[in-house]
Length: 138
Ligand code: AMP
Ligand code: ZN
Image 1 (tube, rainbow, N blue to C red):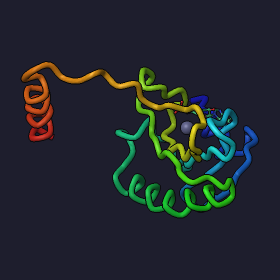
Image 2 (image 1 turned 180 degrees about the vertical axis):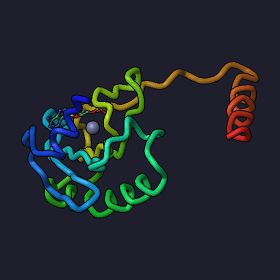
Image 3 (image 1 turned 60 degrees about the horizontal axis):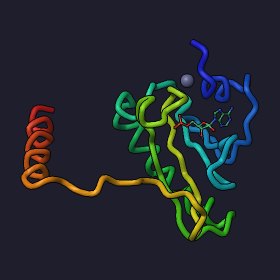
């Protein structure tokens, strides 16, 4: 399987690593939203957030709590976004699970969401009901 992030893990593709251990690598995104935009990946290949074992996600989250404040300090940023894109339609281009840590600044022009204006009468309740039923069956 040709996976760009597996190639980064195996050094076939160069990267600017900022952290690594036995299980994870963090490196700079080649096309940053803002400078310092960092990706955290497990060395092991999993296609996306949902496909990743719980223990790996837990460790990744704990690691993000160490790396994100360091990115912020290094980049003099007051805030950051942590995101997983899951699925092509959500913007996932690389199908090896990765966590984005994106330093953010006031008025940096990156407005993330352009929400719908709101639910019609009754629609919010019926939407919540649909989701609740699905969660109950998980
Ligand atoms: P996503 O759109 O969530 O799949 O994010 C994939 C990210 O990987 C994008 O922000 C790309 O800029 C980044 N990316 C792709 N190839 C490389 C690479 N060789 N080195 C560093 N970052 C990369
Ligand atoms: Zn991979």
